[in-house]
View 1 (cartoon, rainbow, N blue to C red):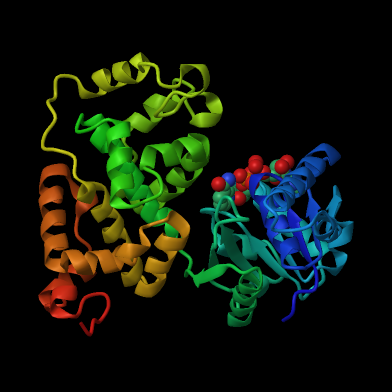
View 2: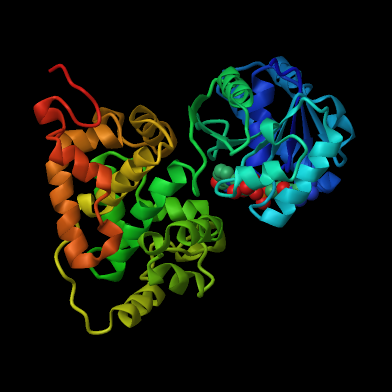
Amino acid sequence: MYIYKAGVVGAGAMGAEIAQTISFSGLPVVLKDVDQARVDNGLETIRKIYRRRVDRGKMTAEELEQKMALVTGSTTYEPFRDVDLAIEAVPEQMPLKLRIFSDLDQATPEGAILASNTSSLSISALGAQTKRPHKVVGLHFFYPAHIMKLVEVIPGLETSEETTGDATMFAESLRKLPIRVNECPGFLVNRILMPYLNEAAFCVQEGLATPKQIDEAITAFGLPMGPFILVDSLGFDVCRDVVNVLTDAYGDRMQPAALWERIAAKGRFGAKSGAGFYLYGDRAGQEDTELQEILRELRGSAKPHGAFSVNRVILPMINEAIRCLEEQVCTAADVDLAVIAGLGFPPSKEGLLHYADELGLDVVLQELTQFSQALGSRFWPSPLLKRKVAAKHLGKKVKRGFFEYTS
Ligand SMILES: NC(=O)c1ccc[n+]([C@@H]2O[C@H](COP(=O)([O-])OP(=O)(O)OC[C@H]3O[C@@H](n4cnc5c(N)ncnc54)[C@H](O)[C@@H]3O)[C@@H](O)[C@H]2O)c1
């Protein structure tokens, strides 16, 4: 199915970026929000992205105006009457999203694809709200969508193969890298990201290292930024929506470290609120006595046990990725593509599962087992990892692990 015109509902951080990406590919797009001021804000965000391209000499002022002419703002669904695909990007609240899907079901042509940019909510539930669940699909872009290449394409229980294929081709036409992620809570990237972020918080809570030391260790490993800078820039309130869904779905192994809520209780939601795991604005670089006090209370008289290691935060990610393989959420190759394109995992390590193969799957199993004995069930090794080791698929050293190697 060819998409001649698209619509985006919600002109906030994601909606505006998605509409820009669509217009950049040469397609007309309508951007809707609840009032004109928010629509104008969204249009201004799009213009700014183009203006930066003009400033860098990547586009002329005339081309900017041609791209902007493809974007129409609206406060009603009237211009959605002839779209072939609509993407919902309103806040992460199920009742609101359900209402939007009902509205879109009424407002768009019967054959149009209805997509959601939700980070964690059920695509199947959104589909069930419409008379066309076979046409409802997740299209999960990453922030900032005009730069990040990865798009998770998520079919719900009733999404047709045709719709999944059309959504994938649409993402490709935007010059993105779509991967198919069969529906599960958190989809792929957020699901494997959470155990990593959470483990980093446990390490700080236990006194093994400061946020700065961990962030530095992770950038030395090759990621573009450490876990605490990442959470502070995403905003703890945004992360919390996803954390709640993951905890509800997966139970103990996703149970957040107490440190998160203790920091949030002080109104520290990240860079935008002036403080998170770090201090910002006038207080940037100052001694963080508030965080030290929170940590003192949490630790009590407990002494740090062991030392921080990068594997402590990377292995839970690997373990969760293997659980995704077990559940046939995606392929091993897509896990590696997703972590490189979506999380900036160092391309030189070829992705998370190639890294596991390089470490040796027996080593991964042994370390996870030791961590689970010392720290509890969130490190419990996945059954597929045990089967791989039992079958002597130990990774690169035997030329067979999650991938096969010729040399
Ligand atoms: N921000 C991120 O990093 C990120 C990344 C990936 C996915 N997401 C997902 O994208 C979605 C949007 O997130 P965001 O960060 O852009 O939120 P946001 O709060 O920045 O923007 C949401 C916009 O939706 C508008 N809106 C609310 N009700 C509406 C309605 N009835 N009709 C039209 N517009 C309406 C709001 O006015 C607001 O402008 C969420 O589902 C979120 O989980 C966010």
